[in-house]
Length: 337
Image 1 (cartoon, rainbow, N blue to C red):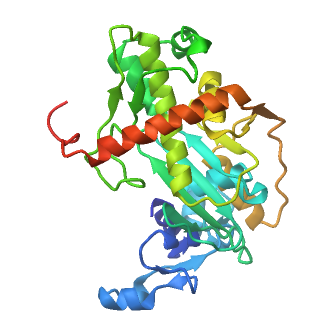
Image 2 (tube, one colour):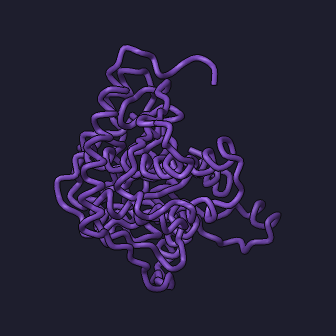
């Protein structure tokens, strides 16, 4: 992985963390080590694989020649590091809170933590040991086209520049009452359908359909897709809230939709914390220091009972649409745009 190559260039040591090792298809989840049998089956010399570390483990020091070139002290220590979504989860205290996180970035990423080493039937199971004693698992699922849908609609379809203006034009009375549905998978889908050729669709268009109906359907479609993903990831316990991050979380309208589609409060930090903060936190932990939370109070978006019921009905319509589109003999994918 790129992070491991950077660590190697800095220190001269080959290493990886449990996060990257556990997503390599060469990892034994029952033993928390490289899968000897799989390596043997594929003729992989296990001795060539890097040592596996907790993400905050110090794996070496910056090489003296490189430290001199970079203007660093000679004894700068380097921790193993981790992947971007795991670092985002750490920055937002997902492990400590034991509540799901949704990242509304280019993709829509759903991350569900557990401290009992439970593996989910759908999604990518990630061993995330911040420290050697940690036994946490993050299960990650992805809707390939996430908040990028907003940019697609504004830039490619209606040639608009200001999302706030476009969203302000959507009448609030349409929320939960929109007759237009949007299937949000414009770029294939891996977690839910393992189909790179899957494509999106609008359904329910009529001569009365407005620009606002269609834009709202786009925003609602991603929320429905993320709820479907969350449910199929096998989440058996009811969450108390969902933490949201990413560029899409800047939209109050979108967060209102998500809160009511999921029927759960959303929590958004006053100061957004992204993957880079998580990486810095790993270094602080590795140095034995205490991480101080300076992110401020949460903004909380609560679901409204009436709107939640309306979106529950809409979601059932969406699932029927999903069944038709994914089971029809007509090929949605392929061809020219």
